[in-house]
Amino acid sequence: MNLDKTLKPQLEERRDQHRYRSRRVVESPQSAVIQENGVELLNFCSNDYLGLANHPEVIAALQHGAGQWGVGSGASHLVNGHSEEHHKLEEELAAFTGRERALLFSTGYMANIGVINALVGKGDLVLQDKLNHASLIDGGLLARADFARYPHSDMAHLEKRLQASKHARKLIVTDGVFSMDGDLAALPDMATLAAEYGAWLMVDDAHGFGCLGKEGAGSVELFGLNQHQVPVLVGTLGKAFGTFGAFVAGSEVLIETLIQYSRSYIYTTALPPAVAAATRKSLALLRKNNAKRQHLQQLIVQFRAGCAQLGLALMDSDSPIQPVMVGGDQQALNMARHLHTKGCWVSAIRPPTVPEGTARLRVTFTAEHTPSQVAQLLEAFAYAQTQEQE
Ligand SMILES: *Cc1c(COP(=O)(O)O)cnc(C)c1O
Image 1: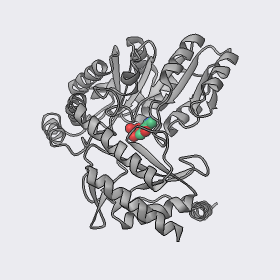
Image 2 (image 1 turned 30 degrees about the vertical axis):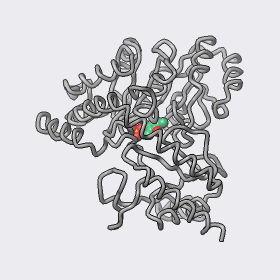
Image 3 (image 1 turned 180 degrees about the vertical axis):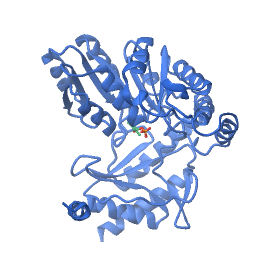
Image 4 (image 1 turned 135 degrees about the horizontal axis):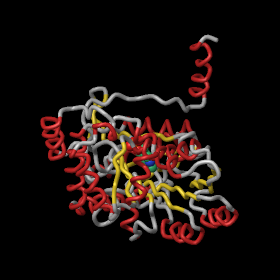
């Protein structure tokens, strides 16, 4: 069977469905204004929520780290790639999250795959929110445990599943802040259910860290949930931290178990030590900079008020993820194009990333945005609405 001939119809189908994905080449660092094709655009799709990806002190830490450690880590953590810089970052992340220990992974995707597979297998049960991030879903599918997805944030449904289970180990897995909707998981209720039914709660707070809590320690800080209540806590470093990588925080026993059994931890090269050095700097900035979180909140309030005036459908979100619901795939693409005409870069998110009929414009804010840039975005939305009505 000819490779290209076989694959081509599949690609054409994607295009016919208005679901074809393509990449756009960026010509500047991440910041509130970004350059593409020689044109400057307001950037409303980055996950760099605090503007740390291009922060001078973080850049300096990376440069200094490269001078001290070179570029590559040279090996996996268990061979000889685990540097002092990685080790210190892990200690600082443990202190930050109020957990006994933390363990660095090379990406959040790998952390989620590796953690779920180290904790459960045949004869166990994994329960996941329908809207969980793809990496969590993939981790659950790979584990060979029984796997069920409950309707978004439906605690009654989750409880029924727990009640009915006779499995040896039960793992409840959820996003802290849902990545495509921006709303929060009902973590206190989930922790109560987990305790009642002897299940373990795993929270992936990729979008909560840096944004929520006075120190930016995310959903668990916001809700005041300790290691006992949320024993498995995952964070990623490529979003509000502005660098790259991920970590898992929890008990001594959890972390040692991951070091022994987590294949995506064991069989991969450690992050460059200079990236760990840069992340130590961004962690320090993220913790102390509550003013940036407050500024971000003001932008969110401004945007939501403006959308209400325009009659745009928002989701129930107080996070920097503010999706504008559109519905149809083509309509979402059209709207994104109109926004682009007005100098705003917003991404149209379509199935299969989100459920059928819920295509949306996923607006994200960073602390680098100004109120006047948010006003510009609102004007662009007003323009896009008139274009679509014609
Ligand atoms: C981005 C994201 C990940 C993946 O993290 P990477 O470090 O980019 O691989 C995992 N979970 C959630 C909820 C995310 O948003």
